[in-house]
Length: 410
Ligand SMILES: *Cc1c(COP(=O)(O)O)cnc(C)c1O
Image (cartoon, rainbow, N blue to C red):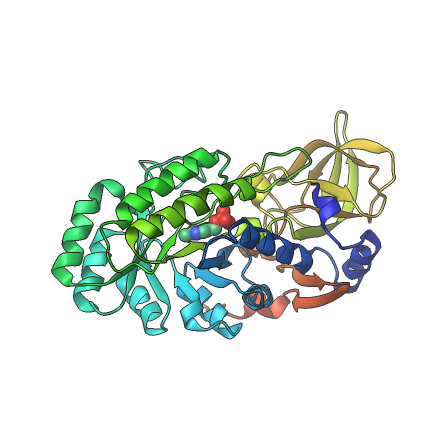
């Protein structure tokens, strides 16, 4: 299904909110988030205990967190600040898992003190934490060394990855657990983004089941995330329904063997929010060179970095002139760096002042935005059943000045 068809927001309404809240602007469709959440839930409906923890780092606005919590989601966090945002949004501590990577013992203890589920990804901290706090239940992040991703930037399960404790170090983990008497209540893996091959994912899951046998007090097994979403018509995406059927069967068999009904957990970010987001920007200048027509928008990689950082290909739609004659444009930004959003892309004829919509702008877009070039980060708007709600104001000069000190050191 195309993004355009699955978003409920109407073109004219989008133009209106862009006028009302200014450009550039992030707009999210909560109906689409709800649809994705229910789709995942439905794919795993035959699991007795299912927990979907939203990976907050994808899009960390507290209204998005609250919306997903109200749908029934728990939260997956990677920093103490994300934990605090969830608490501000009204999420109870016992609905939050903390899955950081290489953080200090102090930060881990800080999160534990807030009462969230701790997940540890290295032997050194596991031993220190277990020695000091043997009573606090801990989940262990395992690296099954399976390369599920399509791109080495985003595959975190393979042999040279920094994430998780190597499955080859299982004897060492067991020794630490025995010596400290700590309580391991969960095991976890996150093999990276873009799972295309379900068989590869299921293979990694078998490694996790095998590992689970070493820990008799488990309450949950967390299979991480990495579901691929389509960026344009015809893109391959993770077949959630097929995966749901296959993993459910294996999971239920495993629970029988294990002798206890465990919780099956996931922590999707992109799957839940990527397609729900649009980034709206205004065309400042249309510039014709000898070979290229540039459409230069009032933004850059400061607001929307994925095309430059990951080479991701976001569909671009001219909201102001949808039926215009398609022409080829290179869509670029206004910051003083090469910031190309698209090269020679076919888009309905663009005039200065037109509003362009970039698709798949829900995940890792606003949350990766910066103030580079001392620009303000954009406002964010949430759409639900026909209404638009402002969920973040555009920054002002005060934000840029808030933490700076003017000193004279001559
Ligand atoms: C980032 C992250 C996720 C979410 O990944 P997506 O590809 O956005 O679904 C899940 N789990 C952990 C531990 C992560 O760091």
